[in-house]
Length: 151
Image (cartoon, rainbow, N blue to C red):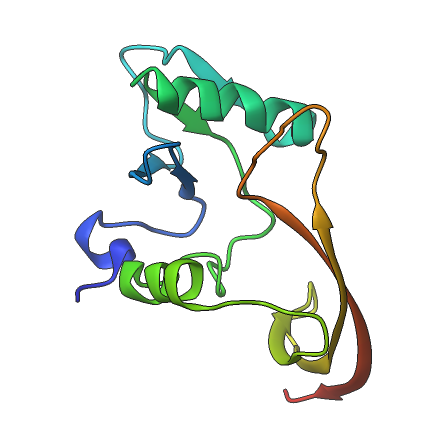
């Protein structure tokens, strides 16, 4: 399957947000950097005010089939922020996370070095059962045991 970044002609600075609706439909929000928009979407998220409460606004926009835009630019390198859709779907739909499961994760630092973290999942809980009951989002706690600097 062709990578999202190739199909949408994404470049450094562009933003992507994936949201699952209640009926298991995957919605995709894309923002191209430094390209003027003619119509301001109904829901806008900015990196300056990005916190968990605003994700509810994006979910509402997705549920009501409204357009939304995400402003997210941690650095000019896309790193692993943009991944093939098939890899994302496999991770979300076919991976069951459980306490005791081992994991490996690559993380690119601001200095452009890559670190490999390995550890164990120690807990899984609802993100916020009061504000978002029956949400698919989970808080995963982990214990990192090894960190290797690769390059």
